[in-house]
Image (tube, rainbow, N blue to C red; front, side, top):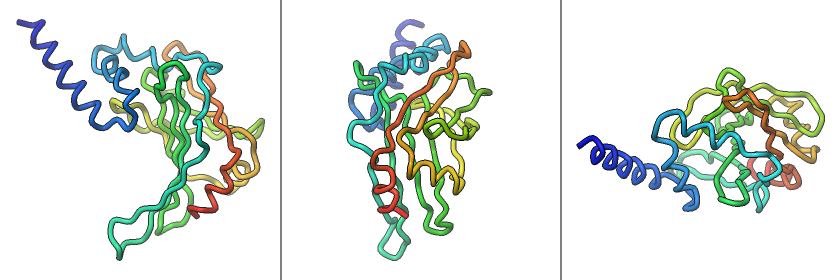
Length: 189
């Protein structure tokens, strides 16, 4: 009886997890997430050299809840595992209509050392610490307003390094190219 209940729960979790996933190749990751914590260290431990940054550059878009509502603009870049297509890091930068001050939201994989947080660094410049705010089935999230000096570095830099620790407290750094960052940011500001 227990075996069939577990099977039913896994199927239900898989079905609900795959509905909200934006890329079909991420669905296998959902199978590993719902069980006990023993399955969660795997996503955070890929070696950085096998994790290329997003293929198409920074994607910029603006949306509005209605014709009368102000535009909300954002841009994002992802890093995925080359062999599986699994999302490792997503960096989203949005410019809220009310403040016009850019805000970063970074999606990280499950299985990371939460107290260690995350770090952003442009090229070999100043390191910006981010505190992990929440985790859910797709990953953990850290966010922060973007200070003017960090924005200037992102606009002129070559590479953004997103760093975090896995559960074994090993540092993992994911490189994200900044080649077309300035042009994408100009479209959303």
